[in-house]
Amino acid sequence: MENPWRKINFRHFLTRYEIFGQGGYTFPNYRLVILCLGLLNAVLLITAVAIGIKCAKVKEASLQVPHSAATELINELNYLSSNHSNVIEAEEEAKKALEAAIKNHEQLKLQIEQQKTINDGYQRQMEALRTEKTNLQTNISALEGTCGKCLPGWVLLNTSCYFFSYSESGTVKKDWKDSRADCISRGADLVVIDNQEEQTFVSNSIDSMRSGTDMWENGFWIGLTDTGTEGIWVWINNVTEVEQRYWMGGEPNNGYLGEDCGVTVPSPSNPWKTRYDGNCIIKELHWICEMASN
Image 1 (spheres, rainbow, N blue to C red):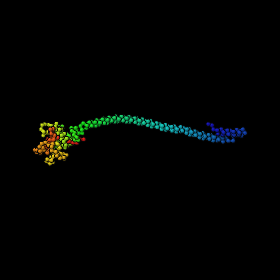
Image 2 (cartoon, rainbow, N blue to C red):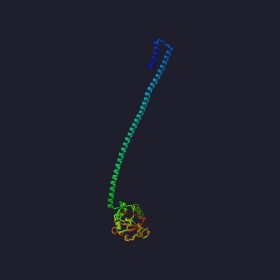
Image 3 (spheres, rainbow, N blue to C red):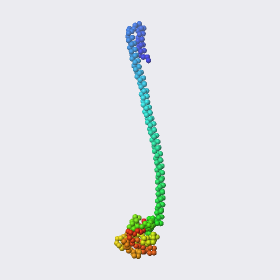
Image 4 (tube, one colour):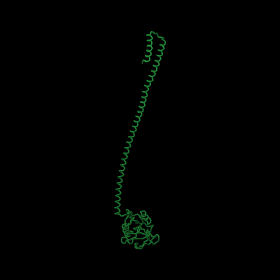
């Protein structure tokens, strides 16, 4: 680039030279011209150096600006890349969580089905139990209507149930004390005969339970004794027996070794003469238990 100042100054000196030449004048001092030219070259050199430095700075600045922008772009790209990786990782975790949730849902569904099957089984059992309960209630009602309110093996008369040991075993016999203990173990006690209807019922019932021809050995223990006071016969319910007509002829006689316990025997021809006194310990017979019906 050409310096405009150089042109102006050269022309200025040239003009002066031409004027002086044309006017017939000679150049007064050529050393002055050389000095001016040297100064002019120095100024031009300084100007060129200043312009070069300025251009270098401008170039450096122009290079730094794109470098800074590129750095910013690179940083932003790295940030976006990092975020993209985080997004991908979050997506993978979300997929795993979804798969786990689906698996749990399937397991819960299976458990619900299993529980439903179990509940259905319980429901069927409940229905079966209800049916069985209804059948049992029907059977109980039928038994109550046909067999009264006595236990199996017992016989009902009015409000009492009677157990004849012979009906359970024709060979097992006991003394009076053990016979009473057996009745108590069954929730009953030895029979107490306190009216004519009961007397006839007992006599007729044991008539078919004879085990031989010996009348004395076919007897049954009853709940009557005079162990407290000889000759005073008392039922086990603490009621004193005042009827004398039920004793057989010559009884009670407190025979050999003492006889303090009452015995009843079958007597179809005369049910009013059925009792005698027997030895409570030595003698072993069948027995009759009595308890209230339910």
